[in-house]
Length: 108
Length: 114
Image (cartoon, rainbow over all chains, first blue to last red; front, side, top):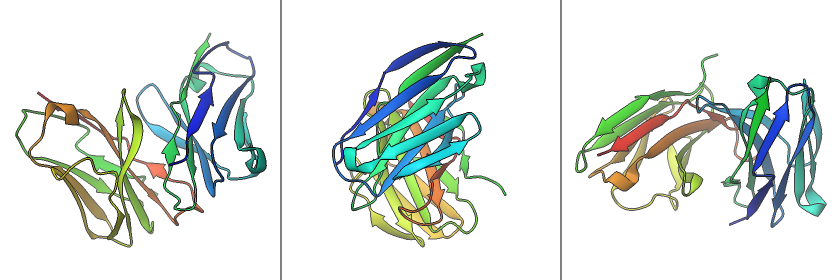
């Protein structure tokens, strides 16, 4: 299957800071999604973004499919942004492969 | 609209027992997925259904695992007999269309096999 690498593995932020999370993948994709797993374990879909750029409030994402990477931007971070952010990709068979995640801790 | 509903939220049982996890997808969604999350292996797709039909079960770890979807609003994942290595969080997710729509996850079932 498609290999997914996320970086950095851990990120500690002060409230109000901006950050960028990266997702590299090993092959062409038809499906790319970003998820946030909150401290209670819930997985929330943030973006479906196989290509292009999308924004939702303080979060935005960009996928450059030809270069096989996607970026998730968090602006003006809040403590509620803490948790693990997963990138998941799907190729020709559309099955999603998840990265290991980036653990984000936002300190007040 | 209600999200994906899973039950139970927590299950603790002894090895050898049968375990049944339940999922109600979002109404109108065509696809249903079962995932497993462990510290060692992360999030793994076990099986998915399209219009109640199992499409790909290549992620099911072994014959002790089985999944059914008798109708559009209900699916089960069964483990028989259960083993301690099956301990994990099991998620169910659904989507409107394969590949072109986001997947929405339930809150998961935390399973502990003693």
